[in-house]
Amino acid sequence: EVQLVESGGGSVQNGESLRLSCAASRINFDDYAIGWFRQAPGPGKEREGVSCFSKGDGAIDYADSVKGRFTISSDAAKNLVYLEMAGLKPEDTGVYYCAATPYFCSLTVPEFGSWGQGTQVTVSS
Image (tube, rainbow, N blue to C red):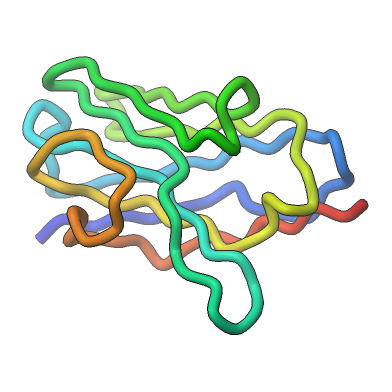
């Protein structure tokens, strides 16, 4: 069973940066795509795709809302996937999750069957 553990969340000011890490175990990066998702606070807020990475075909994708500010990368030797977040905005606040899928890079929640427990990111104005 794939296991994912996120870390690196915290509270920052508008415009600051954070780096999230996703430690994956029982997984071969050649066979899985890793995605980052987030869920903003409040009723009715759904989990949304932020970025994904697929080592097998080299695919990378970002949500329009984070393009140019967030960067996904990986260290396959350590089974780590990072999400570098720069220029953070209050609307980036939420719980960030990493997830794995044996299919292709995607920003669609139902495509992913394995999830971490999440890490909180809070951006103050």
